Each structure stands twice: as C-alpha cells, then as structure tokens.
Image 1: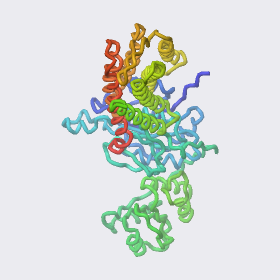
Image 2 (image 1 turned 90 degrees about the vertical axis):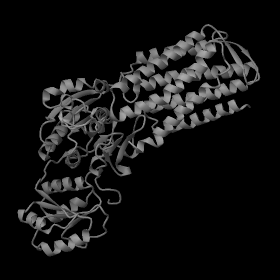
Image 3 (image 1 turned 120 degrees about the vertical axis):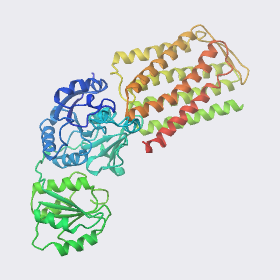
Image 4 (image 1 turned 90 degrees about the horizontal axis):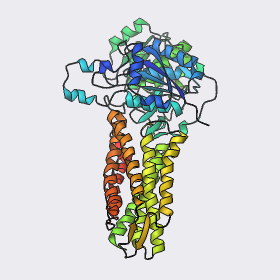
Length: 335
Length: 225
C-alpha cells in the first residue's frame, strides 16, 4: 500500500527572501505572493502537501509577542490537521519567537521547525558593491526550507530551528555568526539533527510525547532588560525601577558585584521579580531576593520570564518556575 | 602479488572502511544507504579486479570477473538511486519507477552469468589475465553509461538551482564522483570494449579522489560551513 503523503503547515512570518538577486521579487510581501513564491521551489511539493498560512509579510514590522501568540494558537488549533509545521520567520527576532512558542506549546506531538532567510528584502535595491552582495550568496531560504520540511515530516516533536546543516532545540540555541550558513548552534545534546548526506536525527530526540497538548499563551510583555555587561549603569537601573515593569532582567558578567549594588539600591518592600542573568556559571547568589539564572540562553530567559509572569505575579512562584525545566530549556547540569 | 594488485587491495580496503562510515552516519536514511552502497560496490569492484588479475585458473578468474562486473553494475544502480534522493527527492520513486530502474540491472546480471554471452574466453597470464568480451558487452556498456549520465543529469540539475548547504553538498558530490567515473569508465569500460584489457587495474585508483573528497566532507568541512 502506498504511504500517504504527509501534510505540512507552512506558516509565514517573514524570512522568505529566496536569493540576493532581485530580493524584493523573490519573497512573500503580501498573501498573494505565496503562490508564485512556492512555484519557484517546485521541489517542496514533491516532499509533502504544503498548506501555507500567512501571518506576516516581508515588508511588515518585525514579529512580536502578539504574532507569536497568534502563531501558537494556530498550531494548537490545527495540530491534528498536519504532520508537522514549518515557520518561516524574520531572522532577527526568530530566536525569541521560537523560545516563546516552546513555552507556550507543551507536550507538543508534532515537529515545529523555524527557519528563514538571512537576505534583507531590499538588498538588491541598495547601491552596494558586488563584494558585499557575494557575502549574502546562498543565504536565501530555499535550502533551509527544504531541510526544514524534511524535518517537519520525520523530525522530533518539539520547537526547533533549522539553518545550514544543523537542527537545534530552539530554547537552547544561540546565534553563532551573522551571514554564516549555520546561523544557530546549541550544546551537543540540543543538536537535534545534522545533515551530512542525509538528515540524521539524534537517537535521544526521537521519542514521541504522548500527553495531550497544553496551550498556555498567557504572557506579560512588560519586562525590562538592564545591561551591566559593559558598565553598571545605575541611573538607567533607577529609571527602570521607577517605571515599575512586571519583571527585570539584569545582564552581567559579574553577578557578585551586581548583587551588592542591588542590595543598596532596591528596598526590601520591592516585590517584582528581578533576574540576574549571567552566562558564567555561578554557584550561589546568596540572596533570596533575586533569581540567579546562569544556565539558560538569554532569549530563553527573557521569554520564559514573560511567560512565567503570564502565569503568576508571585515572586516566589516565578522563582520556582524559572528554575523548573519547562520545555527542556535548561542547559546541561541544571536539572 | 604485484604492486598494482596491492594498491588495488588498499583501494578496496579504504572504500570498505568509508562505506561503513557512511552507513553508520545514518543507517535509516536512503541517501546514506545508497551512497554507502556505491562506495561498498567500488570496494568490491577493486577487490574483484585484484583477485581476477591474481587468478591462476579460468574458473576462479571467471568467478572474479563476474564479481567485478556485477559490482560495477551495482555502482551505477546505487548511484542513480542516490542521485534521485540527494539532497532531496527529484521525484517520488513509485513501485513502477523502482521496477524500471531495477529491471535493466537484472538483465545485465543475467547477461553476465550466461556463459559466453558477455564474458567470453579468459586467458590466464598472471598478472595480465584477459577477458575476451562478446558483443553483448555493448548492452552492459550502455547500461552503465546511461545510468551514470542520468545520475549526473539529476545532480547537476539540482546543483544549478540550489543554494546554501545544498550547493555545498552537491558541489562536493559532483567533484568527488565525476573524475572517478570518467577515468573508471575509460580504463575499465571503453578501453576493454576497444580490445585493451591491460589497463583495468588503473580505473579503481581514481576512486581515491572520491575517497579523499568524501572523507574531507564528512570529517573536516562541516566545521567550516
């Protein structure tokens, strides 16, 4: 008996530019562009039945939390109609978007693969020399989309990112180097598949989740980020505190000195969650007032805090949620 | 055993190791299985030629001649399957299409096994044993060349429209296989058809180019992408 063709939902939120030449004519700007755009890649129709779903075009603003919530609701609502989903996304906001989705959709039973193009829409219109144009060669969406579709047909049931020859877990991914084929990388255990000749899905990522999908699309977007990495900008922190956001993330390479400063600046009565984010593993904050995050990517931390604030405003409960491994986002050794 | 045969055995061994590596990278993927089978067939082909040249009687020489002709036919078959699927499907391979691909291979195997149909008289003169090829060798030649030509057509067609990682993959594959195919076909297919059987040891040597390219691609290049 012939194997039935797989059905894939192709959700568009930008990131659709095909090539560096005539980039504006090789992308989805409005919904009506989808058909001619797909016609330029006849290969993908051989792989599966593709149903495009349009959310954002190439000229629209960068996707934000509202678009990601809409995306999550579409996937949750139409989960049983498709064997997998591919999301094309503007590349600059792809990582937080994919992280948001990983917290929103728990017990996912279908692959959701993010991919995109690194070529800006108006590249060919700009007066740039051939040398720069050459840097964008091969960075269009076509190869990424074909690979993402192959992953969506057979890949791991979670939110992932496909660029170059690597499929990585979205909430453990980081950007490597702009304008490189493998734009995203992740720790070894979060590399879900690699491509040498064919696509190889890592053995430990092949188990299917069986519980029912949980859609939890409550987020609180009112989170401020204060960067202490280069200098401790106290005035800026004070200004942020006055604005009373729902949560604050302080990025620092030196958690100890940041904690000392916060102890001086912030009164005990202050009850909003304050996260100290450091990329250097740090044993103990020694201070229960702040939540130390040292084994999560920054994008995952930011989106997880927004998601956690959507579940509760209680600082202690948020601290528990931030330490909990909700969607396999904690880097190795944290569980 | 002469130096040429020893090199043939080394080539066979290297291809055997490489085929196992390609298989082990992903035994479930048809691309890896097909390409691993191409390399394994190359190894058997090389080994078969060495053993044929080393045979001191007609019976064992005939056995090894059949072995390397079947191995070469398998190279063309697996390479065609590989080219249809790599790096993505050129078309859906239905049961009828699969049958149409396998059928000529079966015909060629039958021709190889029917006495005096393709492989005629074998002259023993170690290490320059010679097969007198019969007229049906033309069918074998056509089978091999057309399968390889179709395979390269699929690969170059995909390469022309590819970008990113696919362009890199296809470039490596085309570079790795085109030279080896050209020289392999020249020394082991065309020249024997024209009556020169003395250079059959040379064809497998060019598969070292494939070996070098594929090894580099698998173990070094991926870190540079």
